[in-house]
Amino acid sequence: MTVGREGQTSARRIALIDLGRATASGARRRLSSMVDVIEALGDDPVVISIFPNHALRRRHTWRLLPSVLRGSAVPESLAWSPRSVRRELDRAAPDIAIAITARAYHPALLGPWRFYIDFVDRMSVNYRARSRLTSRTHEQAFYRALADRHRRFEGGSRSLVDGAFAAGRADAAALDAAWWPITLDPHLSPPARRTVDGSTDTDLVFVGTLDYLPNVAAVRELDRLWPALHRRVPGVRVTVAGARPTPEVTSIAQANGWRLVANFTQLSDVLTQARLSVSPLTEATGIQIKALDAAAFGVPQLVSPAVASGLDPDFPLVSCRTDSEWVQQIARYLEHPESARALGQQSMQHVLRHYSPRAVADLIRPVLSPDETAGR
Image (spheres, one colour):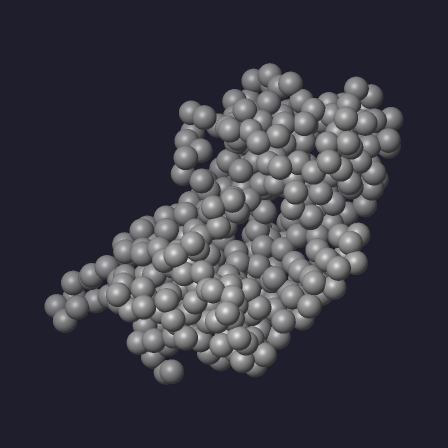
């Protein structure tokens, strides 16, 4: 908010430049979360969606190549028209503009407004991880090339803009950016959250988009742990839930006798029926929405260090580093439901307190203050 001559405050107009990918659930959640936080600040969010309205015709792509080659834009910016987006940005006349991901940034969007990049996560690390997780040679080369370009951009873009954000705590530190975590989904209202009466129909649940390579790798990891886990906890029940499961995920679930819930409509249908949430991601950047959602439902969770690094250090969860830790901790919380319920309740209270739009607004308010860029 801005302060007038007589001390009265007025709402700033903050433009969010978003790719507009309808099928990307994580991107939609990031956008809606930022809208909620901006409204909690008392400001006016304006969303500018790049696709489908600002797609670039292929014959014009060559005009944008110099920016990519100089490292002032990433290769994905070749798919849309900075001129077209800039015209819409001029019409919006914001006080502040924020590009959500480097893929929604181009230097042509800079103007009289203050400009920020929301990296969300380190795409350089994300793409490098995907190059390791795919077995296809051409995809490995493609992801490595993207990783190199994003690493160059991440290292040099800060001098171009007024500031930067990241959704994951570890990524924010690595990028020298402010931490702007994704907030709790306001649609997960208290009556819909998990009850603690112990009535469940599965022991472990893993939730995530099931054609996303890091999530597929997490299912592989759970499969690798399965023989030892099944010996330690005979009859343990596992549910894997998420959109667009790959044939590999389907095959693993069938081979192990796990329940596969594809394309569920209500997250509550999955989380309220689980005793523990597990997230054995070996590769993870940003903040894992699955961790926030499990906490919102009061589901105790065991996660990998990669998942824990995206959250604040006081987040109530159990981080497992080794195979033996995974098996022992799962067994411990399944055999001691009172400890599991206590951990779940602690995580619910924590996420309500620290990941609400108002709490995150307090966190990022100083970064969006005009005083931050007075010396530019």
